[in-house]
Length: 306
Ligand SMILES: Cc1cc2nc3c(=O)[nH]c(=O)nc-3n(C[C@H](O)[C@H](O)[C@H](O)COP(=O)(O)O)c2cc1C
Image (spheres, rainbow, N blue to C red):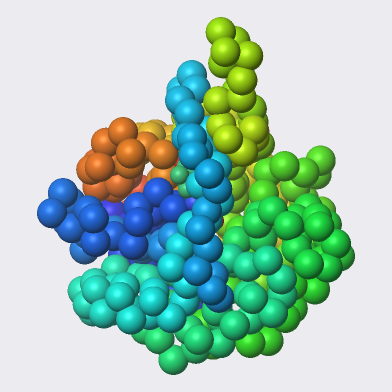
């Protein structure tokens, strides 16, 4: 008998544990002709802000060994255009059983709350709050790097949200457990990690930075072992579900992330390389379950031995 691949995050059941990582899959429409979107456990949108964001100057992408650096700067048309242009497509996909998770970004608490309020009556299953955004009005430090601010922004988001909230954590901290606990104490229903690791690349011939922004976020297989370690640490620090991401390229990587403590996984950079990666990974997880006689995939969460 085929394994039961369903997993539940904050009361929301996904048909399988695989979702897109925010910002690496557009809002799904671009991939409609390339893959069967209804196979996905959930679709996570690009970051959406209260007003349109232009993003950073180019060049804003650079290749690295086994990964990439990006400094897109969360370019998006803002919540009003998002609801008008993207929601009908996402609602139709949701009607076919793929869960919809909207990723929310902001420069200030008010900006997060504006987006969250606008999404109250939309057909959205979960909100993912990106607290790895660069500067905030209150003190020019990323919300996600300060446990006191993280707890406060989580509380504010939770109070306004109609849907359960996932706080998306940055790995650019000394101790991820402190931030994971702050999110849980603030009322987060789940956490997701890792966002990209800050990096830099220099063209030595021209003696210039490769990215106009100078620094960028490192993603892809190069960061996978760091992500596994952080998911392990975070999941042992909290009792809410953890969504694991960072360099997942195969079913083996996804299973590894679940064994480390993830209830579900997201696939990002690999989709740029292979648009069908998520569907392949779902099939590979199912094959792993069959090979190991696993009846329910959720049994894998945190099941690493020794
Ligand atoms: C081009 C690009 C754009 C991204 N945009 C967002 C975003 O809008 N919001 C967000 O929370 N994370 C964003 N991320 C981070 C990813 O969702 C993910 O956390 C990270 O890339 C690690 O997963 P991966 O190694 O599978 O790509 C972006 C990543 C990339 C590469």
